[in-house]
Length: 251
Image 1 (tube, rainbow, N blue to C red):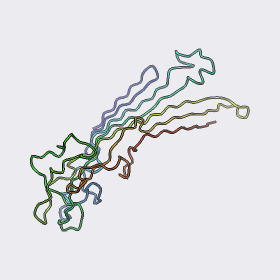
Image 2 (image 1 turned 120 degrees about the vertical axis):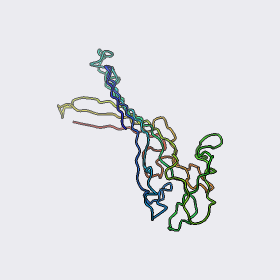
Image 3 (image 1 turned 180 degrees about the vertical axis):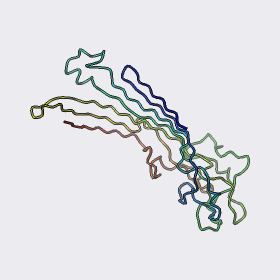
Image 4 (image 1 turned 90 degrees about the vertical axis):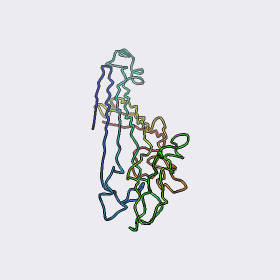
């Protein structure tokens, strides 16, 4: 499901807000990422579930604002050339994204499923909440390992479902300020432009956590040891604020 709203204001400001709610389903991919590999080679349907790459909810807000100052605007319309060159003609644009976390499939270190593959599923412990951790969820305790049991009889598959948990959500704001200077030179009588850009990625320096250790009988079960985009293979949101400046000449 997708919902999108556009609005343009008289002051030169325009926004677009979009929300996507999705559910992608597939068979397990066969890799080792977050336990997303088939555990029963004789029953592919048992591996049918929410895709590892599913983002259930994504909200984006994009905006563009032409700062209403300088020639052609109510404010600063009579400003001299120097003031207009410094304060007029600025543009402010950006995209803010908030999204839910990726699915997690619990697994264990046991390898008695007889298919030569890693990623045996544990059993679910009835009545124990998967996210019931002391002090609430954190990077050291994202889920409750006690909600799963790996001490069951040999040679069967655990009943914990694929993609039955979710990792941390992510958010980022990528904003930019830019301005064009127009002039003519003796060598080029046509209009020449220099564009100055100041770009900010993850402007508010939000820490977006990566995925936790999904091996429930590991000593680091539920612990998050890296940031989103750092070795996860997605590269959607970087781990820190980045700024860059640029000049572009057009004639």
